[in-house]
Image 1 (tube, helix red, strand yellow):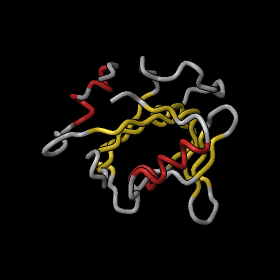
Image 2 (tube, one colour):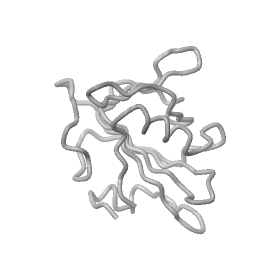
Image 3 (cartoon, one colour):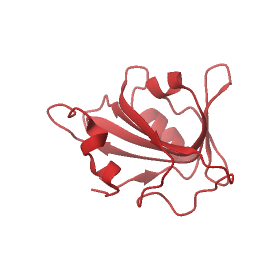
Image 4 (cartoon, helix red, strand yellow):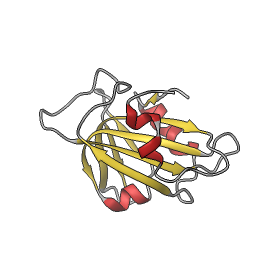
Length: 140
């Protein structure tokens, strides 16, 4: 499946309702500063180098088994968020994404957010990111 770019508030709201994030679990994540060829060209960067964080999560859907998410140029994120992500937040005019907890505190901020849904049966392979096309810079 192709990557879906979160460009506005409606698309972020759709991602937030796409999965039961209270039940979903992060299976793996990794971070690196280099960009991939499938990243959007119009990332609004601060001038500082921030890591791109890749996550793979279980999905609770009859249409797909997993969701792969990339937080591009992420300058604010905690490990608690990476283990239990959700997408209740806002998208600004430059397509930057901010995610807040129920108390209104900032949990994650990134320059762009992209994701794709996957069907991986019967189970996600071990070390998904070491063998996936996303790490190799290819889009399937």
